[in-house]
Length: 192
Image (cartoon, rainbow, N blue to C red; front, side, top):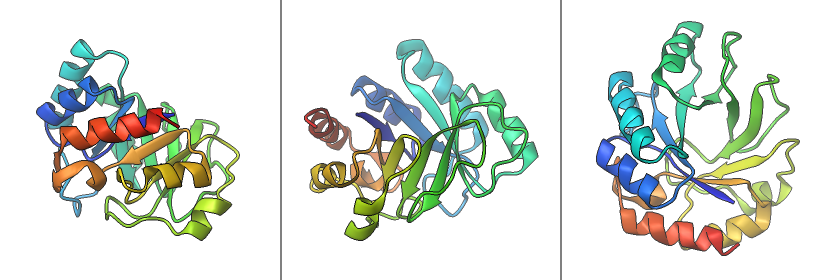
């Protein structure tokens, strides 16, 4: 099982999370309502520096209802995959995590490699037990939504995800990661 830390806003957090052994780092690129929103130029330098030191970590561009133009721009950032909420533009060339709030559905594109179920854009809300127990996607599952050290074991047991995606559950304040929480969560995930 792998860990994604989403909502990375600065290089120090990116490097610390990579050092802690996470598999994926996520960057929120076009959802300006999020306190974790970052500009593409900031992300470009974070990815370059992180890839130099931790080449196995994958970088995920998180996009909400992206346009073809945005996809073209984002794919130039050296990201490894796109996590897309909403319709998937036809010009995507990288692997996709298809994201939905409160469930999963059929893949929209042959580029979809995982289905991502979220409780709500880094809100800290968790998915209901009913949703967690009924998730049976066709593709590997990424689970997100209010995941913390206190509930990660139960969530894993209920839905058996391939990737656990955390954001607010490993922060000291919105947009600033707490490295101790990342280490603790990763340790719990590895025990499952």
